[in-house]
Image (cartoon, rainbow, N blue to C red):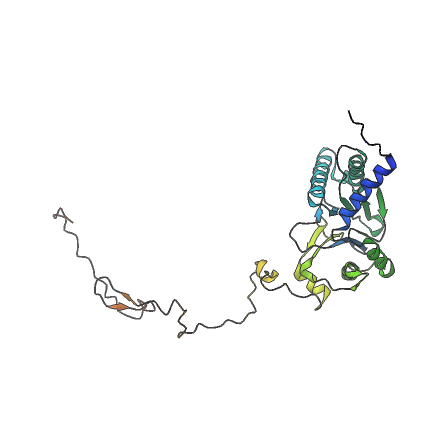
Length: 309
């Protein structure tokens, strides 16, 4: 019987931490910025899989790393919030309580030797009635929970993004200022700055000025292009635009090119005229019964005594 190799607890934890950090660093980052009326969450995410979601009325969730792992955590958070709000009161569902639950879960998974650590980092944000009551928590792969203030970044090149935010963030700014700062921070890197197009961004905000209890709202690509200015390029060729996908009833701005009657590919002009099944004369589809007399045959009156009628 062979003896297993001995690995010190320090080396084991270091290997598990390096494994989780490498998985998180391969993903694209997420930025959270507080502004005067709430908290905005921004991610460079051109795919349809959401990194930013709503947990409850005033609580939002954002994550980086392996999608299947943080999606399981998001679903568990939604169920926990629904059960707590139903059993007690909606005001008992807080961002701090959800962040504590996430920290305990990730810490237990990281310290156990039976399974690999989760390759995820999480933001839990809650908007309050005033700016001083806003809460922003960052939970790491090993269960550590950090109370952030003003701004935070995770995933990807988080260090350079956090440095840019620290140098340019101003308190009590507008949503436009916070959004532009977050996008500029995500595009800032050691190789220089780059402009991220609007259709490659996933943006959501917790807006305390909304009258309904739910403060979470997503910002569409059309709104982002209006906020970020003309530098935010339009979707690439072949991608659906928001103006056509929204179904709002707006007319397209593309010029309408009339059909060429001499075009051999025009199927409408190559169809021969129809013939009347009774008279055999050709008919035109443009003929209208109001412009010409009705020459259609009329059936004879029924003979009540004729058994064949």
